Image (tube, each protein chain N blue to C red):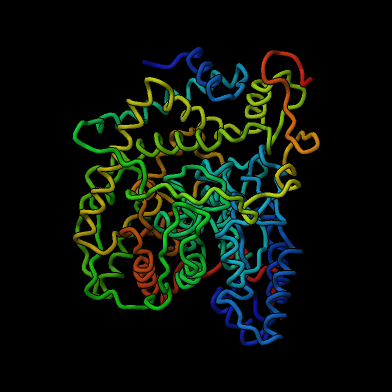
Length: 505
Length: 103
């Protein structure tokens, strides 16, 4: 019986490879065929790693032939955001600055996915250095939303979200500093998780905001994201990353636990926020009803200091980005301006010509905010706002187990539709405060919006290191949608791409 | 008080980004917009609240013994492989002081 790879979840692929229904090589070849057929429209990848993929697949098949135990993600095709190092690939951060940068080592998060049996299909497009919400700031090419090619996939992990939504791969890795996993997941109709800060190692991931960045997975189902979380965290704390923590917990064991009697918070102010479109609001309300129908208790909670979140983030984020990106001086790696008479000129011109517009804007803002006299005014105020926002969430979690809110105020916008950078920043309203508090959040697709016909989503957020619990709630929302016939079925690939290349013999 | 073009030129110098003249105009507009967007945070500069610099409050510096760890060190070809200019075992840079070339 012929099946298309994109009709299979990661868990089904791994089970099929383990059972011998098909080989990992057949899966890798099907994924390469799907990529070849779909990439001209989607453009989710900056580099497709056919040789690495086939070698990894052959290693899985050899292990099976030898009777060795297979990993829980054996044979599952994976896309990797291009700010994560993998030996044998370039790591460009979608920037001219790092156009030819060859990964000198492999990031822990990538290695753990490979150790679990994943097949590395390639490096996914992103906003340059992860500065953005559209992936349009990639120096190389935009990525198109698989549900409507005239629209953005969101960002900054737009390539990772689009590759999963288009069925090119079953899983992908992204990074989230202010919403860069959850927002593109929402706009592309897939599940995307930003785990608690410290849950996943960041060793080998190019730094943006060191107190905010976190790596997490995308998948088409909650179970697939749980499998990826298991692979990322099961080995425990990474000694190579001083901020990583032990959080090994079985992400699968409690996935289908009932939510009856559990308490889910709703923040009325967030449901009334300016800019929230009626269709997204209606979808989040339907998710609330789904949880209530399964016996969860909906409780109103207040997060009084959230109005400071965007301002606090755009102080802390650019300040940390400016510090982190100071390393790009054109000497040890990265673009180097030729013919400069002295080192200062070489650095300044290499940075001026290697970085794109938004990367320069964020660093200039950070430089200003950290300059003498300004630092005290903005930086300390932002870090005090951070204290209050974190305390807001802590007191809310005394009353509820998780909070349900939108992930993004609207559905995917058209390429170039939001040209003012500060307007773009305001679209991070629902995601940013989670990074500030360091907690976990997961974006759950809710089918298609009544007005736009594009994917809509809800976000579930929870206390630190309760990421497993969040997935239980996310699974309950997903379960409530499984009987739906209208709109996009849970776990489905964008219809224009379903079954387009990638037949599994 | 709005930032002037000259202010922004000074910030660019500090940030080591050689902005072209047309970029300087656009950057001045952007920085003034962005700083205005940050206004709400100023209300939080109140004396009785401790700043939070990091989401893991009790994080301590991670130390290790001062010994070479071969597994964590890049070998020479990898360390130099991504540099645009090298000379034997070294990164090559132009003159650090003055305006003369790399002599």
